[in-house]
Length: 463
Image (cartoon, rainbow, N blue to C red; front, side, top):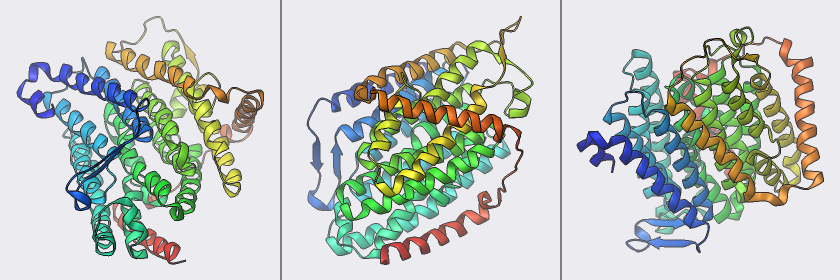
């Protein structure tokens, strides 16, 4: 459909939206059918698995893609843009259903190329540099991953995920490094804040809402399929949640706050793999809506926004999304937080509760921004409200997926966390100005961080 839309440019937006709607329909169907496993060319070829877990991720990708297309509907984007959006959407879906390392490798490489073309779409020097930085980092990581996949095949004569159990520890370390980088996990994901914050608004929404999860779901699959790896994945989940929220609390740039929050929220998905699908859906809806909203604000600088009231209607949308990611009842972020925290192991509880509190503090910056109805409201393209209505409406609808969460005990704890977070924000963090170093985000250090991460992984798997 991507190539067809390029040949029929008059129908590019309609075809793109049709693809997203088809994905929504198929994802919803997965929740009502038994899991389906497909093996092509015996164990040497492609292995696919579609089940409710992949359904959550496909639904996330579909809703985010549909919102981005609606947002760009009257923006004058060329057919090339919509073609790349469809190719990216399809390759992300492919990554969500693959359960063999080579098919996943192909899907992740197509994702890298399509993402690069969308990041570099404005054709400015800055956009091209950010795109090339992303592409080079991604390709280096995938070289490590490919060597690990070959070692898995050598040990098990199969590229299936379960073959990693029989492989050498080196294979596990190499494959995990590639997936940690692609998924923006822990220090391997420090390429993410600059890439997501400097991309165009709809591209940022697409990357943070759906694309980055293509590296996360395979880690979740490995934790579920191979029990021995579950503690390792959970450990990275806690570390990632704390690292991301630690940066987000002190950031003053709105898009960088959202980017670091993405790193943190990916940690929540890995911290409880068995319920990661629902959390991924909620995060995708919230984060893509927040990026679209921040894109229409008059400034990216929080200090400027604190002295320049924003339009009330925009603030309401911003507040709803911020409430959801903070875990406020009536929004799906509440159910996702409750479900995740209930499925933690005892040693994870303290760290993840600190991360949850940090999330509340970080998004208090948005909730308490001044707002008013100006005499002359700013003109906002119609597609913006259609996209926001789809995403925020989905947050309310997804809330019914875990209605069992609405018990008195479950409601009191998130409300107490939110109240404590707001109090800490007003008493401490609202008055602190701390510029965290961006040393580790520099391009030449990203490769060095990969090397250190590989050494850490070797030590962990050997132990």
